[in-house]
Image (cartoon, rainbow, N blue to C red; front, side, top):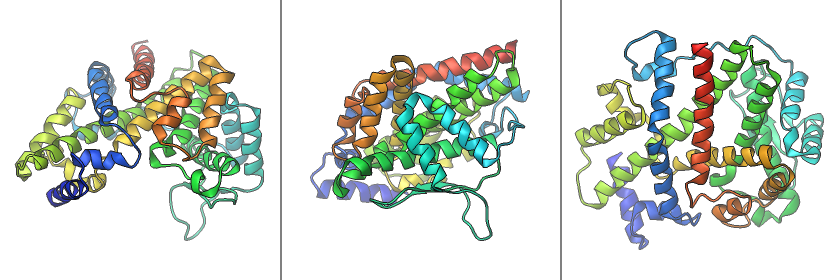
Length: 366
C-alpha cells in the first residue's frame, strides 16, 4: 500500500501536478474543492449517523456496537416474490416520473430481450449492464424473484437507458460517459423505485415500510458515509507521503482507526478495525471512491427535483443522460441543476437520509 501511494506521488510530480489528488482529479476537470466540500459536509452530519447507529444497537439488543454488527440486517427480506414480468412491471411503474417516452423505450427494451434473466449453468453471478455503440444494451441478471432483484433490475436499467439515450444523440467519440456520471442514472432509478414502493404501502404497514427504508439507509451509509471516510483516508495518507513522512503500519492503523471513529460514532474500534484499510482494493486506484459518494448524492438531488418540480427537472435530467460524455461531468451536472462545487447536493442527500432515519425511529418507537 505504501509503495502504491509513493508511486502516485512520483507520477503526479513527474507530470507537474501539485499533488497526487490533483493529478487524479485532472482528467475530469474536478477541482479539489469538490472533494473537500464532500468531506466537510458529511462530517457535519455526524449526529444523524450516530442516531442511525444507535437505532441499530437498539434493534440488535446489544450495549456495545462492534464493526461486524454493521453487517447484520435490521429487517428480514420481504416475503413477496416476483416473477420476472411482475418485476418488470414494478420497475416501469416506479419510474413513471421519468415520463412516458423513457418508460416506453425501456418497456420496448425489456420486450426485445435486452435482459438475460435467469440463472443457468456456468453463468457468472451478480448483474451488470453492457453493450457497444450502435447496438442495444445488454443486461445480465440472475433472477430469483426477491425485492433485491427488482431493485437490481431498476439499477441496471438505469445504466442501459443512459447508454441508449447517449448513443441515440451523440457520435461515438462523445457518447461514452465517465465513471463520475456512470452510477447516477442507475441510482436515480433506485431512489425513484424506493419512493414508489413507499407510496404504495399504507402507513400502518410498519414491517413493509421499515424494510424499504432500511434498504435505503444501509445503501446510503455504505456509500456516502463509508466512501467519504475512504476518501479522507486517501487524502491524509498521500499528504503524509508528499511531506516525506514514512507510511508505517502503526501510522496507517492510527489514521484509519481515528477516521473510523469519527464517521461511525459509538462503534468500538479494535485492532481489526484499525487494520481494515489493508483489505480495500480501491486504495490501489487512489482518489476513485469519492465518486461513489458524489454520485449517490447527485442522484438523490436529481430524483428530488424530478419529484418536486416535475417536467422542467425531468427534461434537464433526460438531457443529462443524452449528453453522454460530451463535456466535463461537473458542467453536465450543473446544467441538470446539480452544482457539486457547492455543498447543496450533499446536504440535500444527507437531509433525505435523516428523513429516512427519523421514520425508522418512529416505527421502532411506535
